[in-house]
Length: 603
Image (cartoon, rainbow, N blue to C red; front, top):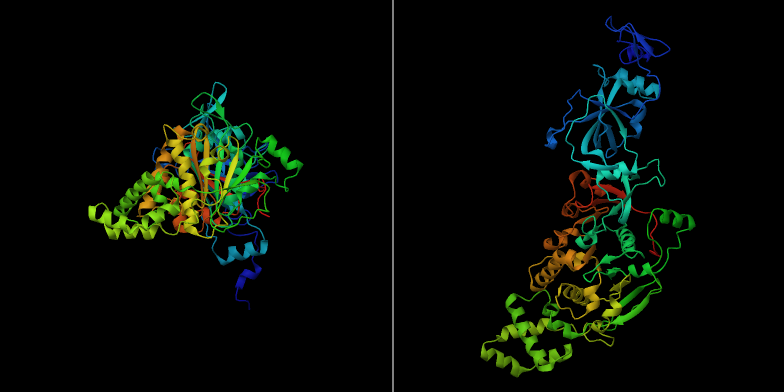
């Protein structure tokens, strides 16, 4: 005797949930159901003609659009044949009777029981196991929707406004499949700087147009508001997430032949890009990507995406001690430079290190001022000889200007910069016109420098020169003041970190002011990092566009401050997937970057 008893003889087409059992009705071959109830003479379940859309809005749980998100209730019933194609994050449209449209996004999917029967039984399970397929008509498939905007025609163009009216029950909902409709619904500009293609769950959103993808662009025209490049960008991603690949592709757009920005004298000037490059990867942007074939190039040209190597790429290599730079991996021109010690006169914190307190920093400033008054364009070696004079130490102590203990602390911390300043190369201050070139890319590789303190000093010295000249009302170098500038900084967390010491406070104060004034001065910060939580808050708050690739660290994910519905996707994103949060450009969206780099990248 089998333990299953009568189940061995059970017919899966009989009983609850199978065939016609429990309905009290018979189904004809034409799909007409009769005998269900005396009140219904005949009901067709096979509508004549093709279905429109993927389902209809349901009022079974209420149909509410409210100013309060928690009070909004908007659900759609999805028909059986459409269920496998629906994803959380997909965009849908429901029409109002007067032609306006509600643009919305799927935020939840749920199966609900259609009939009052328990499908969690041995009989139902065995029947499903034997049948090998699921009878989805026994279940409702409900999509919970988030209203994004109401779309309406205005003078022949499509506009958007906040969702301010509720659609009617049983309104047909369809997948959004028109590029203009989707871009308007998400407030994505039609033109601008290309970042990637709109996607849902790692799959590009497709339309019936050519090209079938929907390009995501950053606003880049003063007529439509300030170009977002001058309101600063942060690219965050873990190792292997593709952040350098993505950063190169965006920077390539700022180096497009036709990219221009108006300046104070009325001219339109191409931007200069200066990229600090700790891994020596960006100089490869000089070269074409050999992986792009003719078909790829034609497709990129159709979509208006700048591609190919940037001929005007120069690697400015800092000369530090005995470090040597070898660059067989790119064809860019190389120019050596050194940091002249005279730059410390304006930025004493360059040799303050991370240990000087405020009192010691004040002493350093006094000593530097006296040194440069006595020696004019003095050198670092001359300054250290100056500090080694015991008579100076005694004089300052007796006069009460600098206590001897403070003097000794300053001297100790000023040691160790001999490899940084005044090396046998041209000073960067003599190379400004070559360093900042409209339409040109300058990279500053530091991979060959083994001393992290020397690396930090070089990067901050050059970056500060650019920032100071940009913010100055009377700049020493007109080239910097007159040229729109994108200042890129890879591994930005190493240079713009918040800390309780003099150097960090001076750096953060300088760059925070630069970030605030960037829009007016045509200065854009372009920061790339795997540790966004380490970037100082006064700078981070000025960032308008955040591009987030895969991040595995919870603190890093929290730090980028993206909406919670996208935050949960970040640890699971594959290489090239990204979330873009740019409130002044669009709704928060998920994108898929280009699989090929637009210039050379890697081996």
